[in-house]
Image (cartoon, rainbow, N blue to C red):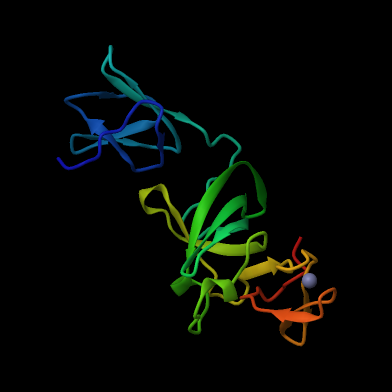
Length: 190
Ligand SMILES: [Zn+2]
């Protein structure tokens, strides 16, 4: 069997392999398929070594976990030339109690070719994006669709909110333009 050994307390998502039945009995929050114990929920894996049981303590109660296809809103934490790191604080319409980080790669930002991530977003901007993958517990985002992209942007010089003027981003304080991949409802989102 080829699976990564999980440690007690580790964060797991549904369908993640926790162990094999030779090692652990399947307890709450888990299920067995073809001799492998999987997590049924998002939470912390608890390995009871003494009683050879594995369970998953659910963290989902009222928290909305992003899934593939979820629309999320987050703040840009860091921008590199080919990717940006976002802190997700809203999934669907719900604000979350805990934060998730997610990655946006430059090839998933726009229907047209983009040179550098700095033309898509800047640190501090608020973006709406779609989760396109959650492999290896890393949420990957896309902003290609028209309704996705930056919903609030801030001037990289003075920090004032950028205005949308004839399809272009503009700082009224500094009297200069900036570039972003904006959502169709830029500046109007709740
Ligand atoms: Zn400015």
